[in-house]
Length: 347
Image (cartoon, rainbow, N blue to C red; front, side, top):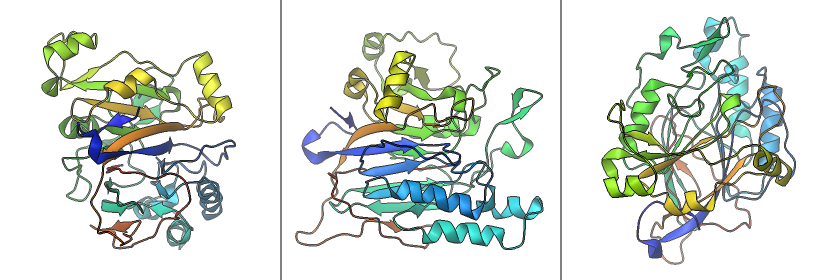
C-alpha cells in the first residue's frame, strides 16, 4: 500500500520515488528501479566539474523516468556567489553548471518554481533555493547557525501551499538533524515553512548521523481521537503544529538488511496511516555515514498521487520548468512502471 495524498483512491496511481543524498563521490551498487529519483545534494566531497560529471553518470545509470538533482553545501562550484567570494578559479562556476545542464537524463533544479509531467500525465511542482545555503556549521565541535541563515526567502524560494513533496539539502529544526554532538543542526525557517504547507513527504540529507525516517502529525489537522490512536498526547508546550510520532526505522539489523538489499523502505503501518495534510513523512537520505562510508541505503517510497487528466492520444512533455529557470528538459523515458505525483522542492 502506498502513501496517500487524498482520500479518492480511484483517481490516484502509485509512484516509486528513490530518495538519496550526500553521496560525496560514492557510487552505489544494487540500486532498485524507480519512477522518479530525487538526489538532495552533496554529489561531491571536494567539488569539481569532473566529480560532478562522475556523480551524474552514476545517477543516469539508475533505471527511472525522471531524475531530479539539487546542490548541497559541498557542491560549491554550483553557487556563483560562493565561488566569487572564496577565490574560485575564473570560469569554474560556468563549467560546473554546464556539466549539470548537459548531463543526459538529469534535471538540475535552480531557484524557482518548476513543473514536471511524466509520460502518463502525472504532474508535480518543485521549488528551488540557493544551493550551498545551510542553517548549520560546526565550530569547536558544536553546531551553530551562521549569520546568513536569517529568514531570506524570496518569492521564488518560498514553498507555496498545496505541495506534496518538499526537497531540501538540510533538515528542518529538531527533525533528523542531530550531528555528532547531539545538538540540533536543522533550519528553523524551513521548519516553519513545512509546518505551514504540511506536505506529504519532506526529503533531505546533510546530517549524516541522522539518517532515518520520522513521521510527523499536524495538530491543527488531526482530531484528539486520531492523536490518541497514534499514541500522541500533546503537552501544550509545543512551539508549533508539529507532533513527532515514534520513530520506527531504521535501526540495528534492519539498517544492515536495507544496505544489503540496496534500499530502505518505511513500515507498512506508516504507509497505511500517512495522509497528506494530517501527517508528513520526513526522510533523511544521507548515504554517507558519520565516517564518510556508504553506510546507508537509499529510500524507496511509493506515493499514491492524483492523476492529471490528459487529452486522449496525446503525449505530454515529461518535464517543463517555469519561474526563474526557463530551461526545459525532457526526462529519459524508460520502461519502468509509471504513475502520478505532484512534488515540491526547496533547498
